[in-house]
Amino acid sequence: MLKNPVAMLQLVERLGNLIRAEMRRVIGQEGLQPVHLEAMIFLNQANRFSNTPQSLAEFLGVTKGTVSQSLLLLDRRGLIERYQDEVDRRVVRLRLSQQGEEMLEAMQPASLWQSATRNISANRIRNGVSALRETLYMLQSYNGARTFGVCNTCIYCQRKSQRTHHCALFAERLSGPETRLVCREHVPKSVS
Amino acid sequence: MLKNPVAMLQLVERLGNLIRAEMRRVIGQEGLQPVHLEAMIFLNQANRFSNTPQSLAEFLGVTKGTVSQSLLLLDRRGLIERYQDEVDRRVVRLRLSQQGEEMLEAMQPASLWQSATRNISANRIRNGVSALRETLYMLQSYNGARTFGVCNTCIYCQRKSQRTHHCALFAERLSGPETRLVCREHVPKSVS
DNA sequence: TAATTTAGTATCGACTCGATACTAATAAAG
DNA sequence: CTTTATTAGTATCGAGTCGATACTAAATTA
Image (cartoon, rainbow over all chains, first blue to last red; front, side, top):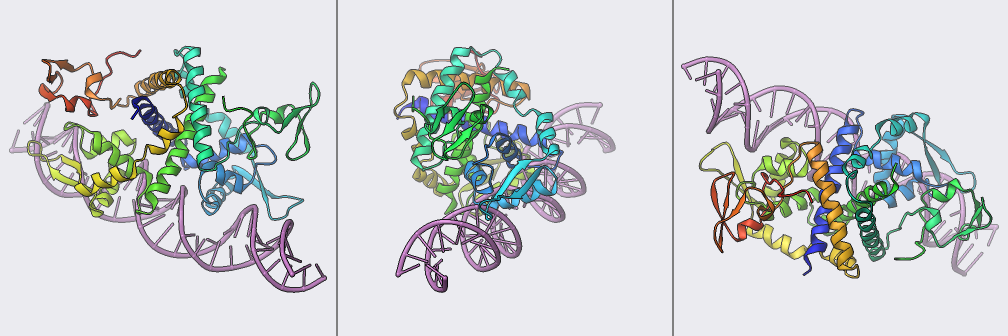
């Protein structure tokens, strides 16, 4: 019956709602919904093993049928491109279109948050990030959800030289920039 | 271009999505949506100055038209009761019905979160709560949103004796339990 | 007394979302 | 090899959200 964890939950819920409301405000005039912005943010960060409808559905926590509808809309609006995978011809690959990238760049969804956190001490934020991250990992492990972290925090990521890395799961080479992208197969190095 | 605040934003977004997905799971078989659960949680905590459709709309960050629809559904399901205010006959008062209270009690929406935070040090959680709270206050002040805090953290709440408090805004007496309810007119005592 | 504001409801259209049913490509089993 | 799963994705349906708009009725202001 600890009170602080409940307080944290309510803060996260309330902040989440405010973020969604802010998304609605920013994106509403484009005729989009919050989930569309979330999808675009994900596609902007997903690596080449994770830029599929299935992966996006897992990230958003919705069914593949639902995500298929949202992708239809984003495609109609010209914000994403869909193309078939060459190896496995069942899978569809997704990427932001030029227009999608420009829109995402233009609306800067994090700017308000940046202002809001400006006067909070770096140490307090670090502590907050740490507590939230740990909670997230626990919640994800409870329901078997993926962590969707970036490669350089993943147990499968091995540094080969100054500039090249290697993914032990997919057995493929990773460039430096690629190690900062989000992967659906991510397994966190340590749960600290 | 600080990285930690962005990390915190992404964590809050992701946790918010997971909480919504969990809500869907818990409440889906009742034929309800996440927003219905949020409304019920709010109504369970709202004080007698804040238990109205307007107040709920502001809390949820949606329009009064939208909230009116959700209330219609909750009413049809017998989870809330609506009654007219005696003084101002335009306003509708809301409260959970017996059945609504029982349902809310039964599904314990915070239980998974309690488990997830069990092994995090109290100090780290305190820091996290502090950072999140400050961010929330900043975001709320930016867009003029209400803080929706409990009376005993509000500048208008004055302690009269051991057991009775007084609200300087509404100029009314508050019982002890009432000072732990959420108010739409809440103004935080300090932004620390 | 008239004009304005406020609280709430009703209706419409676009979209989400889960459920179900489907297609097509791949993988597994015999 | 062929048959049988399994997997990735799409299509369709119904209930509901959500903003926008238009409305009613009560309260407030002029």
